Structures are given as structure tokens and as C-alpha cells.
Amino acid sequence: MCTLLIAVLLIQKAGVARFLPDGSPLQFHFYDKSCPNVEKIVRHVVSSAVASEARMAGSLLRLHFHDCFVQGCDGSLLLESIAGVIEGEQQALLNANSARGFEVVDAIKAALEQECPRIVSCADILALAARDSVAVSGGPSYPVQLGRRDSLTANRELANKNLPGFNFNVTDLVAAFANVGLSARDMVALSGGHSMFAARLTPDPQDPTAPAAMLQQQCPAGAASDAHTV
Ligand SMILES: *[C@@H]1O[C@H](CO)[C@@H](O)[C@H](O)[C@H]1NC(C)=O
Image 1 (spheres, rainbow, N blue to C red):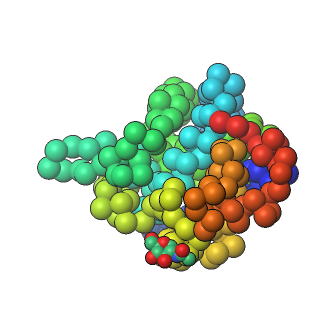
Image 2: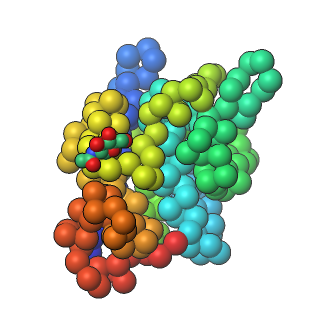
């Protein structure tokens, strides 16, 4: 199975804030006392969202990725634009009209507010939702360290600069990932995550340098049928 598995590598590593602003490390049991059901609640909302629309799994995975590539995994992608105050990342080139699933994040947040008000960060919600999207789509699951803090600022300019374009060739992709401290190996892992979109495994005859050509070697004919087409 060429799909999903590889997304895990990236998510565990990608721009992941490993430390809180005060220098303390993220923890697996961060909410054990303050919100012990956090993972169950996130899983439940993600499950039903993906059950009603399979594509949502890829959408939620992408939100976490696009959040992490700009200022680290800090929820900055969720901040809406406020004229003169915040230039939201949702209007960045690679998010406008394509970043989706915000209503699911809102539903998760609402469910968590009922259970444990003002405890769980939105950045942690994105990290858990990405993990659960992969898992409920038939991919592996993995433990997620928690305790991220939400940013009060967003950076649309950095989003436009940092987010890898769908039309990037391998050279461009390696550079974009290196820019946030990720290796070519990590880059391949994220590209694999995108194979949740089976179309990514179909090479473009006009563009033999497209990442799909590389993936096609790893995931030959028929592999796409294992992918979760979303
Ligand atoms: C990749 O794309 C860039 C433009 O974004 C171009 O300058 C470069 O030559 C391309 N590299 C390959 C190997 O095609």
C-alpha cells in the first residue's frame, strides 16, 4: 500500500513545534488531567465527518500541513482576516478556494468547549484531526504529542512563500521542504500523504518532472486503486 502510511512521517516531524513557548516539550499526556477525553472527542467528530464525505480526510490532513509550513504548527491558518490587523493565511494563493474543512475544526472545537472549556488549543486539534483522518481512512495511527499554543498572528506573505505549489517539480519541492528544515525523505513522505488523492499517482505526460512521475515508480499500475480516492 503506497498510500497514507508515509503521511505519518511528515506529520510527526513537519515544522512541528516540539517545544512550547516557555521551552517545555510537547507531551503525549498533556491533557490527561484537564481534558481526558480530548482524543476520543476529536476522533468521533472526524469519523463522522469522513463518513459523510470521504474527501474530508484529505482536507483535514492538508490543513495541518498548511498550518505547519507557516510559523510552525500554531493554528495560524485558522485565524480569519481582520482589516488592518490580520492578513489571514486562508486567502494565500495555495489556500484560497482550496483550504477546506474549517467547519469540521469548528465542530471539534465546539464539542471540546462543551467538555472542557478553553483548554485544548486549535493547533492541537489540527494535529489530532490530521492523525485521525489518516487512521479512519484505513491508514496507520500514531501517538501525537500535545500542548501546542495557538498563535495570535498569521502570515499570508509567508504562506505564499513557503507552501509548496501543486505544480512544483522535484527540485522545487526539495527546496521548499529544506526551507522548513525537512529532508528529501520527509518530502517524499508528504507527497505520499497526498496520494490520498489518487490523481496524484497519474503522471502528466506534458510534465515528466512532476512528482507524480516519481511516485509512479514507487507505486506502479494498480496502486492507485488502493488509494482512498477523495
Ligand atoms: C523546476 O522548476 C523551476 C521553476 O520553478 C525551474 O527553474 C527548474 O529548471 C525546474 N527543474 C527541473 C529539473 O525541471
